[in-house]
Length: 201
Image (tube, rainbow, N blue to C red; front, side, top):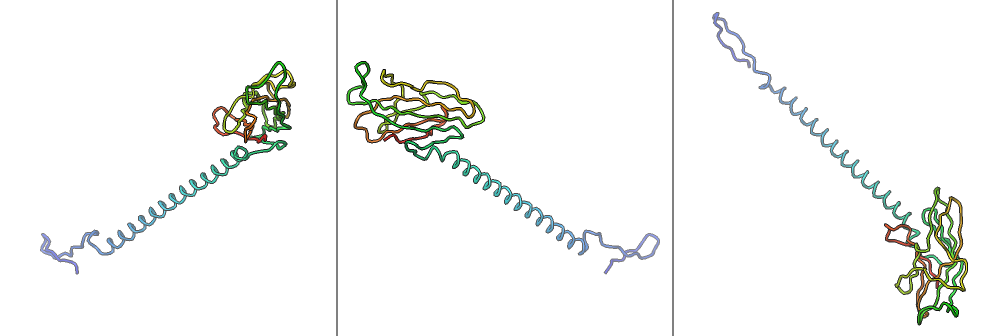
């Protein structure tokens, strides 16, 4: 019920309540605040879900990318199989063991390991090759394929392959005659700690 007051002219006037004291105003405020709060909550959830989905998507992509790029490095190849790293192909055609000749002989208790390999460049740009990119791993001991013997011809030298080009040559290293495992290992990059592994024995 509206309050009545006496005016200066002696008449009575009804005084209306201020709008902020009316019930309908507070109901409207509650509805608006609830709507804004709900909207922000949904937006937060949507943003959070979107962020989570993006993170999961990136993780999946990263995992699949890592898996596909590391797959050739994790696999151990055999003589005659083609090992491919991003289009750069290496194949060990055959392996021979040699005791040298009258001029060149291996160290005591060791033998020469001669790996005949073929390198093919199936990438879109020129690729360098070098015998020092390869290591001979004998029971965990890595050494260079840097031996020079007079009875081995066509040793692999350094060079560069254009797209689609191929080179074949021999890599010569030394390993103990009683080595249980022998692997040729190719490190795709100086900054990459993984390598392509090909069993020679």
